[in-house]
Amino acid sequence: MNVSSLLEEAKVVFGKTTDFVDVQLTAFKPWEIVSITVVTLVLTHLVYNFVFDHEKSLSQRLKLGFFYYVKRFPIIRSIVEDKMKPVLHEVSATKLFPLKPGMTYKNVMPYVGKSHTSILREVDEYLSLDTVDWSKGNVSGTVYGGDPDLTLVASTMYHKFAWSNPLHPDVFPSLRKMEAEVVRMTCSLFNGDPNASCGFVTTGGTESILLACKTYRDWAYSKGIKKPEMVIPISAHAAFEKGAAYFKIKLKHVPVDPTTRKVDLHAMKQAINKNTCMLVGSTPQFPHGVLDPIADIAALGKRYGVPVHVDACLGGFLLPFMGEAGFPIQPCDFSVPGVTSISADTHKYGCAPKGSSVIMYKSTEFAHHQYFVSPDWQGGIYATPMFAGSRSGAIVAACWGTMVHIGREGYISNTRKIISTARTIENGLAQMNNLFVFGKPEMSVIAFGSMDFDIFRLSGELTNKGWNLNTLQFPPSIHLCCTMPHTKPGVADRFLSDVNDAVNTIMQSPKSKPAGAGAIYGMAQSIPDRTIVSSIAHGFLDALYDTTPFARGENGKA
Image (cartoon, rainbow, N blue to C red; front, side, top):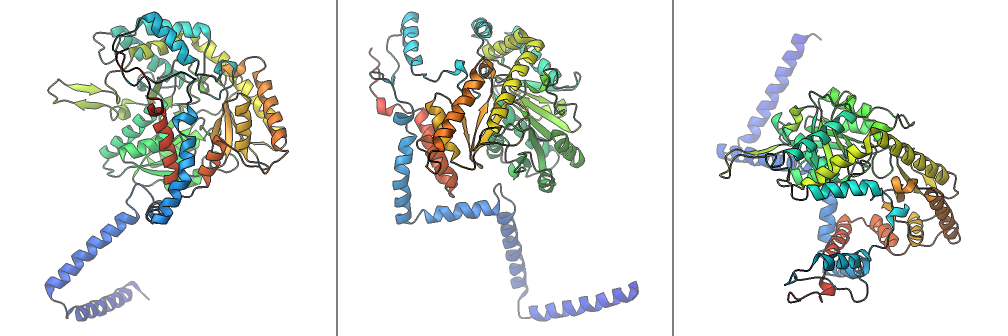
């Protein structure tokens, strides 16, 4: 059958079809046909938007809707409320943050100000509430430095720059120089082009990540993408989810390999479409301390023209020194083609005081999308590179002082000590019966679980022995993030000994359930309605600022 005969047959079929439609529509008036067409188009558009064009997937919305309406039945609502009361009590201020006998909260500002000596005396009383001793290496992450000499450097910088503000570089040019140098020193660590790469000092990793999300959303807008999407591993930091919520970016989570805990590259590739505005990889990811394959992710980004962000907030000030410390890893910085931005926290392994991080871009092409400019404000032309206007210059100065004080040699030494300690702990845990280590940690975080007992029981046992670890979910696990305090003599051995003793105790009754915080975490993972889990989290956040159970503070006339 040749092409001409095919065309003739197609014309015949088309003619019969139009004739059939004409016959069917003879019963309708023209205005009815127009109305039906318009209504059909509108309904089709609405259905399409409901199914496909939403920040949450259809399955997520159906699940949320189901639980929302189920809980509206009085009997169900009553059962949920009754079950929630004891749980919310467990996350209340009275339970989580008990005061010492005789202590009260200040609910009203003192009418007469207090002297320096009096304030210091009262501060010492407040500090008596801090019973966890991080200096002995009992805490996972949290405090990354703590060296007395470094503390003196930081406090001196705080003293000198207590009243400074980076918003006013004309008044504080010294601070501007310091901030620019912090950025340039950090960019150079990550092989940024000295003539192209740029960056900014932020208040922490979350702000750095949020700024990257905002930057790539606006970059997408400039490319004509009206509804941007980001593709991230399920192991990526929750700050990306926060960024998606704040900036109305559709979030696409992709799975990780259940054995290696690295992102599934095939799933990431499948998730990319014309609306994708950023891909994310972590070095390492927080839960299990595993490095995502940055070169492969960057190759996807380069192939499809999508920016790639490397979240090095946790490992940023270990990564550049791993090779010289004797632990070489694959490149995951600006030397990798396709990497367009990196976030690295100076206040973690950079050992600077809390409140500083650096967000870096390969070029100003992306960085300019981060800026906010109001050219027509009556108060003058207003421009800021990040969310905040006024910021603490003391934090910037302390960060600069820390980096200059430690120096490259010092960071290499710190990296060698931390990674060596982490490997010792990883090997020790891997050799224990009834435990297993997740993936193959290459850096400072070791996550472990058990097939024989509820791992949250181990978390509780170690808490009773004075340890403070991170509790994880999906899958249930706990992790230790090694920092400089853990490198002190005897800390790693003490930790492994305590873990071994705790496991032996647990295995006397391996099927028992955890109590306290472990029970809440275990229960939270099993609840299908995640809005209930959110309500528990709301209770915890409320407790952070709750002074009502202790409303006997000063009355303003003291």
